[in-house]
Amino acid sequence: MKTRIVTDSSSNLFDLPDVSYACVPMKIITRQAEYADTPELDVAAMVEALRREGGPSGSSCPNVHEWLTAFGDADEVFAVTITGTLSGSHSAAVQAAEEYRSVHPGAKVCVLDSLSAGPELQLTVDQLREGILAGQPFEVLEKSAREGMRRTHLSFALQSMTNLANNGRISPAVAKIASVLGIWVVGRASAEGTLEPMHKCRGEKNALRTLFSDMKAMGYAGGRVRIAHCMNEAGAQQLAALIREAHPQADVRVDVCRGLCSYYAEKGGLMVGFDGGE
Image (tube, rainbow, N blue to C red; front, side, top):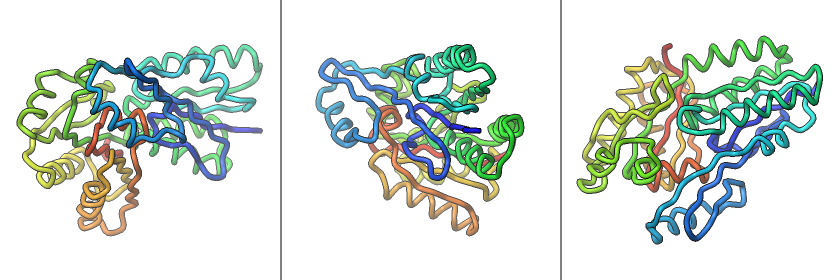
């Protein structure tokens, strides 16, 4: 029995030890170039090119065929997608699952809408991986993953939200305030899978403290934390230190944003997935 986990590249994960895994690339598109979010992508060069060009740009999701190819020949598939509220990736994965079942009688496919992006997806993937390695059956894995997703959250701290605003993800007025006044915006993914700016902070230090305060307000009490940064290792480590100071035993991991998350978080941005209350 072969069980596979598949995500789109909003997860920032290209490898997953000890289990069958595949990542389907999102794409970032400008007038001059198309960037596939694969391990080969030079994210820093892409971010600089986007800043230098300054023209219209956007992102596109994997199509049904790409999801189908990623499912491979697995008997059981768990597909975890970026929020379906803001992307067509989830819809494409659902269509792929229906087609896969029709071509592979008896195959089981579970498509999970993260209602989020980046490091919160990693928490779900980690839970699935642990269950697979423990030999849990498909139905138990699915139930545990769905229950776990009710306890995880995503917060963010961004210096710039130009790409989010230009692509209709947040209000242009909020993005303009941040860019003109040099304000950091701290927010979260809502229960509906949209992005909610919550606070405007002067300076990174205030933004990090505010983000951690929001984590605690959402039920964080020392559980798992996954921090993803766009070219801001120092800020990510400062946040990790804040968390570890309050919860020395916390499982905190710092990773980098890949192409899609870097496009939306922009240079300096931080995304934080964590275990909290329901």
